[in-house]
Image 1: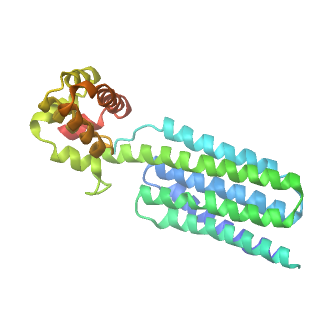
Image 2: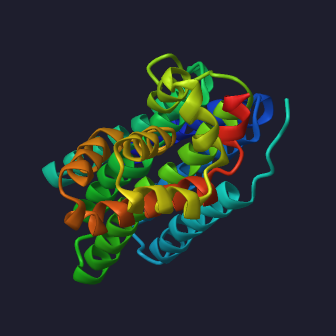
Image 3: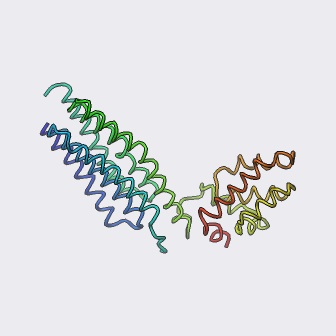
Length: 86
Length: 199
């Protein structure tokens, strides 16, 4: 299970690093919102991975809350993003 | 490590691989639409694989229920949030330039619209469209079809409806209300797409 933690953690870290580059670089605000959405999905994945590795189900509640917060944040950004005149 | 643990490990690594692929796609894909398309993949398939791994690893019924709750929430909310984001991205894209492409149905209909009906469609008052639909004459029906085709993908089915208006004036209650709804949606939903593209 430690090998699983290592491999999956490296994959999650790579995905989060790519999303962070897009978050910094992104030409429009919508690209940044999408990158944040991906990073939030990765956060849910890391929480679930830690729950699987450490054999404890307590952190799954945090995964529920974070996945709901991801939806609320994405919908709120889609509603409230200002129109950027390029 | 037993067989169940092995399958759980494979599922966890596949879910993590899905989010790595989403990160690479968000970094590498050329425009916003394809990035949004790729960003939805770890939210559905990746979460499902991860939950499968955790469910195989910790097998108690309370944990399974919570995992099913997370998966159902993701299945409900991920398409909705992606749709909201895509709608905002589409409006921003069609605001000043046509980055979506020539196959865009709204832009094609707006370009191909004849000039006589163009200003009627761009003025787009809901009461004016409803009045011409109630009159039931042939050119009023065609003007409504042109203005309805400006913003909605249901233009083909609506043209069939306007033809039935011309044949049977008794049956124009349903299509006239549909024209009113489409015109209201155009006037309320994207207020400045039509005047920007009519200029």
